[in-house]
Image (cartoon, rainbow, N blue to C red; front, side, top):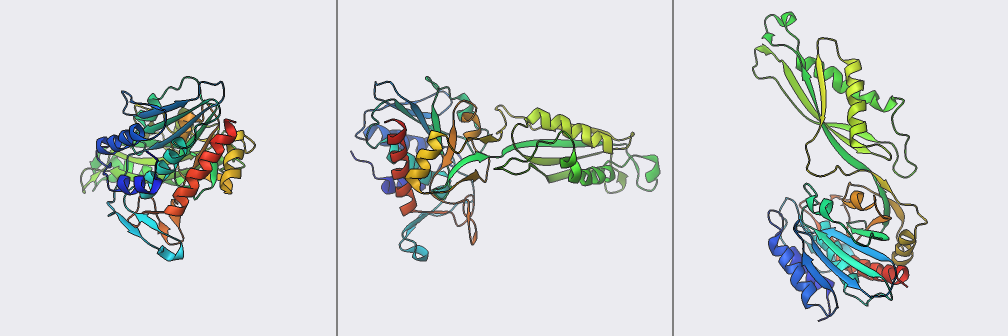
Length: 368
């Protein structure tokens, strides 16, 4: 049976996968098993759907990866003809992130068999949460290239910042609010430490800005403290979001931030910096050279620009073992605002089709 990426996309967007991916994974497995292609399909213990097309002739191993889980808000499925004069679009939760890219990768994977080598499709179940699926993937042989499907507007994204998360806990001493001098106000101290984040990037051990990714960023996102309105608070904590650039590691960031804040805090104030608890590694930054074959092949096939991707992805894991790019139809945001993870999520069908054709052409190039 021939594969129609638009027909699959419409079915996929109408298949929920925000709370449980089982139904969506069943659709994916059924699609792979019923396609007119010689491929082996399995669902591993981590919930990954893995399909392999092996020519039996020595050559490169290319991995195509994306995910099937989605996030709120709910967006009703709708196919709109000629939207904004730009052709048909599919609206709905996951249409852009990442069922449109999945449809494109499937079209390439189920297309003509490569001349030599092996192509693996690896679709993960929980990219939007803890990436336990991606962390469990172990390819044999090691890939020569990885294409990660995400909304890039058909640009070839060869780099991305990483994302680390840490909680800063500030400790003081309780006292009656009528006698504030008899305690140590953790909320007040936290205010000073929040201000101290502004010059964290001026430390000598801060990674130099990347030519592609720029400088790392550090953003406080949530804060909590105090237990009573008439009491000097003994504890306050705030969470920070770190968008990293190579070669910074999560532990290196944590240690540097702890030292920086300890230097800025009064002696009577306790300061602790702890990375968020995860069962999987943090998503670290990566960069793939512009002249790498997978970048060149996709750039030539798609006509897109070569640029960094705007969000952290599971490409981080794969880039540790092979040249990796992020590529696909759709956009994280357009001129009107957010698209992915937003109430107006959509993908243009012409982009889905063109993305599939571009990946198919890149596979033919790499595996020729």
